[in-house]
Structure formats: structure tokens, C-alpha cells
Image (cartoon, rainbow, N blue to C red; front, side, top):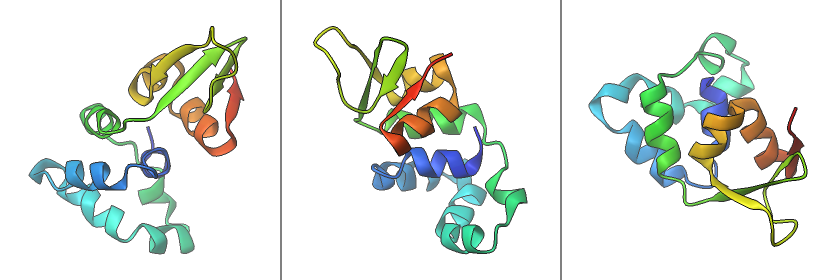
Length: 113
């Protein structure tokens, strides 16, 4: 997962992301996070597009209490029917990848495959 995707996905759980980034092993990512607006404004792609370690992704996504829903070939932010399969952010990331997870959160749903 790219750094900008992690920040975008964790936008509703910023406190959780910050708590994870405050761990000594993620110090460099905390520095980048604290200047995220500057990075975006100046399109510093070498930092924004940097791949973050899986351990950081896992720790950060585990902090989210959000759920997503899968049905009829779509990953959704809100349930569509009572038969939708519920999944965590971490589960959605592991099964569908960072891009699909981020798109579902950004647009409300994303077509799978």
C-alpha cells in the first residue's frame, strides 16, 4: 500500500493512525504524516507513493472500527441488502487490495473484478 492510500483509508480513524505512527519503528512515517498537506500541495510523489511495510498497514487498519459490505460484485461503504457479507477494512485490504478499499471509501462503492 502506498503512503497516501494509508492516510486516505484511515481518514475516519486519524487518532488510531497517529497512535500507531507514534511507535518508534514508524517514526519516519509520523514525520511524513504530520506534513501530509504540504506533501500533497507540492505533489512530493516520492514520499506520497512510497510503499509502507505490511506490518504498518496491518497495525493501522486494525485500529479502524469501520465495516464494508460485499454483494453482487461490489464492495460498498453501506449495506445494500440483508445478505451482504460484512468485512473489516483489514479484511477488505487483504482480499481486494489497497486501491479497491480506498475507492470504496472515497466513492461509496467499487466494482470488484
